Every structure is written in structure tokens, then in C-alpha cells.
Length: 75
Image (cartoon, rainbow, N blue to C red):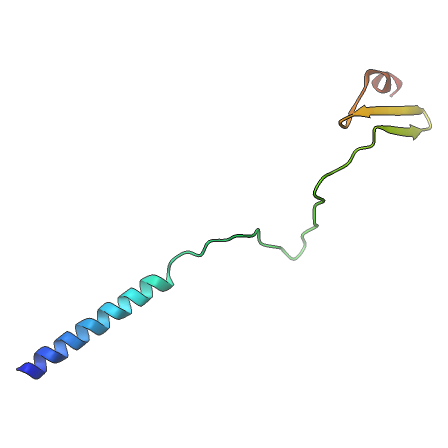
């Protein structure tokens, strides 16, 4: 009788341990970086726009990438 109870207790412990290990293995992992795809083009940290551009129609002037009134009128 003691052997059967010991066997039942051992099997119960083994099942509980297996269940706990399975639950631990299924936890989602936190992603700390964006995945890099095969055809990804790297983006620059910042995009610079010049304040003045010399063109065939004259000098084009910009402020923060937006053309000023004179440039708009020229174009």
C-alpha cells in the first residue's frame, strides 16, 4: 500500500513539474529591437534640408524645409 501511495505521489510531482516547465517555456519574450528585414534600407538619424539652393530659375530659399514667399512666387 505504501508503495502505491509513493508511486502516486511521484507521478503527481512529475506531472506538476512538467506542467510548470511547459508554462515557463511558453512565456512571450520581450522584443527590445525592431526586426531587421532582408530588404530594409537604413534611415538616417536626421534629414537635413539646405536653406538655399541655386537653380536655373534663381535662388530658392527655405526655412525648416518650407519655401519662403519669394521662392513660391519664383516657382
